[in-house]
Image (cartoon, rainbow, N blue to C red; front, side, top):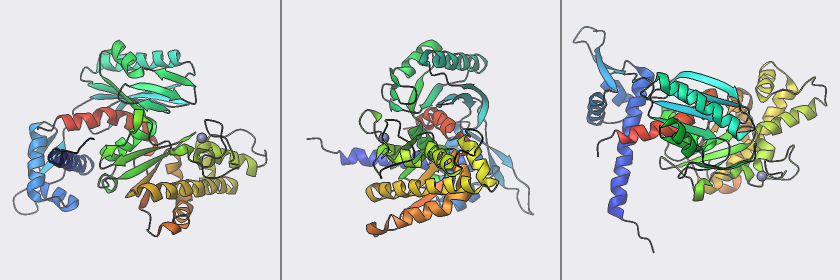
Length: 396
Ligand SMILES: [Zn+2]
C-alpha cells in the first residue's frame, strides 16, 4: 500500500504557494505596470514583506526593473516594470480548421504569428509546423521550447497524440518527432488542458486566485480541462476531462465525434448551435455559416441566431451543473469562440446551472467567460513552456 509522506507533501505544498504568489506578483506587474510594491500588496492582499521578497527575486532574475515614479510632493515612489525578456517560447495551436504557430515572451504576449489551414494529412500538417517553427528558431535564438495544443486525446508524459477524432489520427509521437527535427524541447497536451493551464498562469487575477476550476472549451466538439490545487488533472494516460461524452439526454441536434446523439458535446458544441440555427431558419439561410458568423448575426439582432446560442447555452449550463455536483470547483470558465457571445448567453447559462443544481443544495461556484479571448488555445500552447519556466527559475 502506498503511504503519503506528509512531511514531503507539506513541502511541496508550500513551494506551490510560493510559485503561485510569485506568479500573481509577476502578473500584476504585467497588467498594471508601472506599479509600486505597496499597490501590489494592497491589491493582492499579500503581505508587504512577501511582496518585497518576491520582487527582489524577480529583480535578481532580470524579470522586473525599477523606475522612479512621479512625485506627489514627497519622495518619488519606486515603481516596477516588466522586462520583456524577448521571445522564449513557441506555441502551436493545432486546430481542426486552422493551425497557428506563434512566438511568445515570458508573460504570454504573442510577438509573431503564422497561420495556415490544417491539412487532414498528418504529414502535410507536420511539415508546415516544422517549417514555421524552424523559421522562428532561426531568427529567435532564445527560444527555449515549443508547446503544442491539439484537439484530441494526448499523453503528455510521452508527448503522443493518442487519438485526434476530427482527422482520425492515431498514435502520433508529435513531441518526439518535432524535437528531433528542431532540436528544442517540445511539450504537448490536449487543447482544453492547455487552455486551463493558460487560465491558471496567464488569466486575470479573479481566475488566478482560484485553485480548483474547470475550463469548458466549446468548439466543434467540447472538452474540459480540470485544475485541482493549481495543477492540471490528467488522469491515466491523459484521459481525464472527457466530459464532452457524458450522457445528458437523447436526440441531440448533431452526433458527437464518436457518433452518439446522447453526449454533452452533441447538445452543447458549436456544431450543435449551428444545427439549431439551420433548423430554425428552415434552410432559408442562403449558405452554411461559420460559428463566428452565427455570433455576429446574434449581435446584429438575428433572432434565430440568438435563440440558437441561448438554447445551446442551456445545455452547456446543464453539463456544467453535473460537473459541479461531482467535483465542486470554485469556478467554471467557458472558453472558445463562444466566450465572445457572453452578453447573449450569460443569463441563460447562469439560470440553467441554477435550475439543474437544485438537488445539490449548495450554490454552484462562479462561471466566467475565458479571460484569454480568441487566443485561448494558443495561450494554452505557450503556457506548456511558460509554466515550466516560471517554476524552474524559483530557487529551491
Ligand atoms: Zn460521445
